[in-house]
Length: 64
Image (cartoon, rainbow, N blue to C red):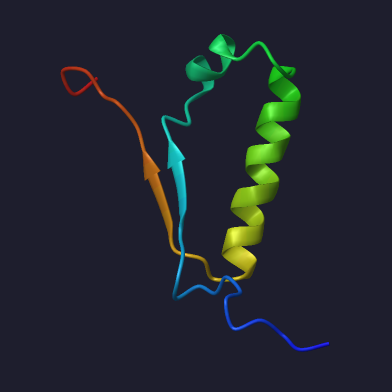
Protein backbone atom coordinates (compact mmCIF):
# COMPACT_ATOMS: atom_id res chain seq x y z
CA UNK A 1 0.00 0.00 0.00
CA UNK A 2 1.41 3.38 -1.06
CA UNK A 3 1.24 6.25 1.48
CA UNK A 4 -0.61 9.28 0.14
CA UNK A 5 1.31 12.51 -0.28
CA UNK A 6 -1.91 14.38 0.64
CA UNK A 7 -1.87 13.50 4.34
CA UNK A 8 -2.35 16.26 6.89
CA UNK A 9 0.81 17.58 8.48
CA UNK A 10 1.50 20.46 10.90
CA UNK A 11 2.73 22.40 7.87
CA UNK A 12 -0.44 22.16 5.79
CA UNK A 13 -3.28 22.63 8.29
CA UNK A 14 -4.19 24.12 11.67
CA UNK A 15 -6.87 23.82 14.35
CA UNK A 16 -9.30 26.68 15.00
CA UNK A 17 -11.30 26.76 18.25
CA UNK A 18 -13.85 29.53 17.73
CA UNK A 19 -15.70 31.00 20.72
CA UNK A 20 -14.72 28.19 23.04
CA UNK A 21 -16.09 29.57 26.28
CA UNK A 22 -18.06 27.79 28.98
CA UNK A 23 -21.15 29.95 28.57
CA UNK A 24 -21.22 29.29 24.80
CA UNK A 25 -21.71 25.55 25.32
CA UNK A 26 -25.21 26.03 26.76
CA UNK A 27 -26.52 26.75 23.24
CA UNK A 28 -25.47 23.25 22.13
CA UNK A 29 -28.42 20.88 22.20
CA UNK A 30 -27.16 17.98 20.03
CA UNK A 31 -24.83 16.44 22.66
CA UNK A 32 -24.42 16.80 26.43
CA UNK A 33 -22.17 19.67 27.55
CA UNK A 34 -19.80 17.25 29.30
CA UNK A 35 -19.32 15.31 26.06
CA UNK A 36 -18.69 18.54 24.13
CA UNK A 37 -16.04 19.62 26.64
CA UNK A 38 -14.38 16.19 26.55
CA UNK A 39 -14.32 16.21 22.74
CA UNK A 40 -12.71 19.66 22.66
CA UNK A 41 -10.14 18.61 25.26
CA UNK A 42 -9.23 15.48 23.26
CA UNK A 43 -8.84 17.39 19.99
CA UNK A 44 -6.85 20.20 21.66
CA UNK A 45 -4.62 17.66 23.42
CA UNK A 46 -3.97 15.80 20.18
CA UNK A 47 -3.07 19.05 18.42
CA UNK A 48 -0.48 19.75 21.13
CA UNK A 49 0.99 16.24 20.89
CA UNK A 50 1.30 16.50 17.10
CA UNK A 51 2.49 20.16 17.15
CA UNK A 52 -0.49 21.40 15.16
CA UNK A 53 -0.76 25.20 15.02
CA UNK A 54 -3.85 26.14 17.07
CA UNK A 55 -5.84 29.37 16.99
CA UNK A 56 -8.26 30.11 19.82
CA UNK A 57 -10.71 32.97 19.36
CA UNK A 58 -13.22 34.54 21.69
CA UNK A 59 -15.51 37.53 21.81
CA UNK A 60 -14.93 40.14 24.50
CA UNK A 61 -17.33 43.01 24.92
CA UNK A 62 -15.97 46.26 26.37
CA UNK A 63 -12.78 44.57 27.58
CA UNK A 64 -14.62 42.55 30.24
